[in-house]
Length: 248
Ligand code: 13P
Image (tube, rainbow, N blue to C red; front, side, top):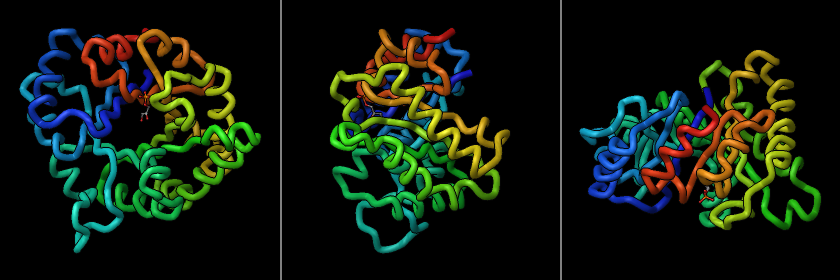
């Protein structure tokens, strides 16, 4: 069973969210995979309550603050997201890191907040094009992983890692299955060293970056790829349903 996750980014208000689930119901949710959707925080409750949502589709929030409450205008806490229906949270998405300047340290604090509040973190790592050209893929993704391992590697709570090369996000450029496997193998080896082989095997490693119905099956078949994190193509119920049925 793979994990198929959709990150809606800053698309889909509450009304469109309800309509999405109705359209998805009509498409059918064929999947034997674990399905996750990450609507904007403002649409979470609409997603949670959407009459047409197949209850096998679990929900997450795209970002949280690391504190549980306080004077942080505009922010959403892990507990609030959980109260609105989230069971997962994306942490350290490249847009958070590169557009909003989120540091490895902040990412680690957010992972702690997620786990304290019972949310499963999906921790995103990935290199920029310049870093890839400079041969620094391993260095960058291991630095990002190492920053969170002291937090999420202890206590045995579930977490997922999404490898999203920044140059492949929203560009139509997709990593080859070989690129994805190589990065995932690097991450898996580090996880094995930190957690032991059997715990490391249970951490799903997702690939994200221009995943579409036409390439999802091939990517999901690649070694060490346990699922996909889909941006643009998850906004269309038909293409999300097609990706959800990819790979069997
Ligand atoms: P795209 O699938 O639109 O490239 O986005 C990937 C992504 O950032 C998912 O989190």
